[in-house]
Amino acid sequence: MSVVELLKEKIRQEGRVISDDVLKVDSFLNHQIDPVLMLKVGEEFARRFAGSAITKVLTVEASGIAVALMTGLSLKVPVVFAKKKQPSTMDGETYCGRVRSFTKEEVIDIVVAGSYLGPEDRVLIIDDFLASGEAARGLLKIITQAGATLVGVGTVIEKVFQTGGEALRDQGIRVESLVQIGSLAGGQIEFLN
Ligand code: G4P
Ligand code: NA
Ligand code: NA
Image (tube, rainbow, N blue to C red; front, side, top):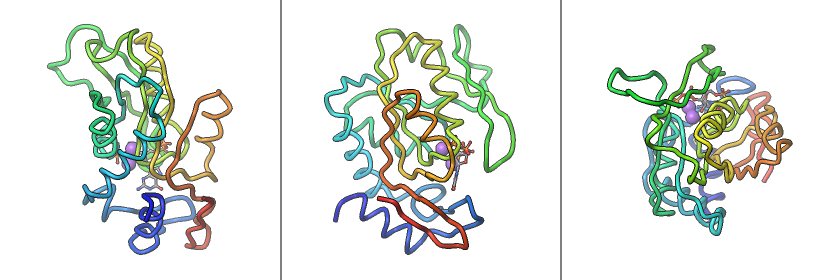
C-alpha cells in the first residue's frame, strides 16, 4: 500500500471529526506518534522533492517535528524547528515570524536563531497540517529574513476547504500534500486525492 493509502486508511479508522473544520488525529500524528508511518511519510517527501538540492528542513514545534525529522533523515539534511517563544538562552541574531493559531485562537511569535539558517540554504517547509497557512507564512518570513531560498512546502494533511494551500500556490510556491481533504462537513471525511 502506498503511504497516501496508508494515511487515508489511518484517518478513516482513527480520525475523529471535531467540527466542520477540525480533524483529530491524535493516535498517530498529534499526540501518540506512529514512527513507522512517519518514516514512510518522510521518505515520500524526500522522493517528491528529490533534485531540489534541499539543505535544510524547517518546521514549527511541536507537531511538525516528527514529520520534519523523518524528512530530514531521508534527505540527509538538518532539521530546524521554529520555537514558539524565544528561550533566554537564544542570543545573537534571530529571525521572527508571527503566527495566528487557528485551533488555539491566539497569536504567537515563532523564532529561529540566526546560526541555523542563512543565504546559502535551500529550505523545505514541512508540517503536519495545512489549514489557513499561517505556519507556512510565518516560516516563509523567517526564510526571507535569513536570505535563504524556499524550495517548497510539504504537508501530511491539507484541508483544501481552508485557504492556506491555494494562497501559497497562488504565490508560485510548490505545495505537496500527501492527503487532501475536501470537506469535514456533517462529520464526514471527504478525500480529494
Ligand atoms: P496552519 O497549520 O495552516 O498554519 O493553520 P492554522 O493556523 O489554522 O493551524 C494552527 C494549528 O492548528 C497548528 O498547530 C496546526 O497544525 C493545527 N491544525 C490546523 N488544523 C488542524 C486540524 O484539523 N486538526 C488538528 N489536529 N490540528 C490542526 P499548532 O497550534 O502550531 O500546534 P502544535 O500541535 O504544532 O503544537
Ligand atoms: Na498541530
Ligand atoms: Na503544526
